[in-house]
Length: 377
Ligand SMILES: *Cc1c(COP(=O)(O)O)cnc(C)c1O
Image (cartoon, rainbow, N blue to C red; front, side):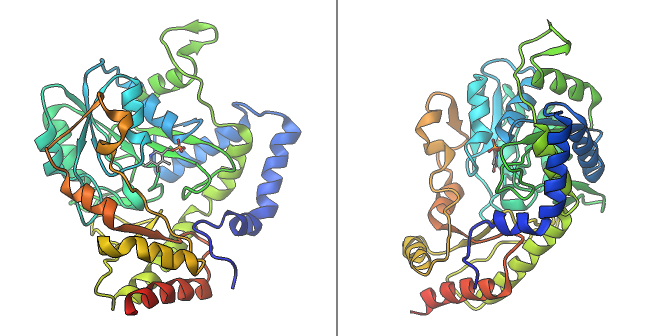
C-alpha cells in the first residue's frame, strides 16, 4: 500500500506530468511570467467553467478576500458578519481594513452559516456578510440572499474550500458557489481542490462595475499605468501557476468525483459506528469534499487522533480554536451572542481524515479499518 497522506500532490502531479510540464515550459520559453497569455487563458477558462462574467486572478485567497472587501468601499467600524468556525483569513482581512467583525455561530450539521443566526446579528452598522462554504459544501444561500436584499447588505463568499460545488435554488436553478452573492473569492493554495504549485487565488463576480474596481485595486489602484486613482495592492497570479492551473481545471470535475467516491466509501464504512457522525449531505448543494470531517465524542477525539497517527493514518483538526477565542481579534470583533455553542462543540469534536483525488481502494480500506478498530476496542 502506498503511504497515506492527507493530500497526495505528488501522485496527482505524476498523473498529469506530461501536460503540466509542457504548459510550464511554454511559459518559460515565452518568458511572459506576469500578465501574459497563460494568465489570460486560465482566467477565460475559469470564467467559462464557473459561468462568471469576470474572474480576476490574484496572489492568494487571503488577498482575494481583502480586495473583495476593499471594493465595497466600507468605512472603519462598518460591521461584517462572519462565521466563527472557519479559517482565520476570513476575518483577518476585515481586521486589517479596520472593519468591525461580528462572529456568529454555525449550523451543527453543515458547519456553515445559517440565515437565522445572521439575521439576529444584523445591526444598522452591518454592511456585508461573508459566508464560508466550509469543507466543500455550499451554505444554504437562498435565505441569506433574501436577508441581504432586505437589509441592503453585500455578500462576499469565501469559496476557498468549495470550488466546483453547485448550489440549487428552491426553484431548481443551479449556480456554482462563489457566484451566489456579489463577489466570490477562492484560493489555489496547493492543497485546495484546485491547487497551484505555489500560491494563487481568484475573485469572481457577475457585476461589471465591481469587476472594474477589483481589477484596479489588485493593480495598485490604477487603470492607466502610473496614474493611481485609489490605494490598491499588488496581487497577481503568475504565468507559471496559471498555466498549470489551466491544465488542472480541465480535471476539476473528475477530482471532485474522486473525492465524492472516497467520501461514499467512508460513509458506508462508518455507518455502523454509533459514536461517529459522518458528514451531512445537504439537499441544496453538491459536496466537493475539500475535507472529510467526522464528529466524534469530545472525550475520545484526541485518543482517536493518537490512535490514527500511530497507525500512520494522517488526520487533522480543522479547527481547534474558534475565531472568537483567537487573541488576534480582541478589540476588532464581537460575538453575535454570549455563547456560540455549536462552534465550541465542533472545535471539540471534529476530526478530518485523508481526502484527495488520488486515494486508492486499499488505502480507504485501511483508514476505515483503523477508525473502526479504535471504536471497537
Ligand atoms: C485557504 C483558505 C483561505 C486563504 O487562502 P490562501 O490562499 O491560503 O491565502 C481563506 N479562507 C478559507 C476558508 C480557506 O480555506
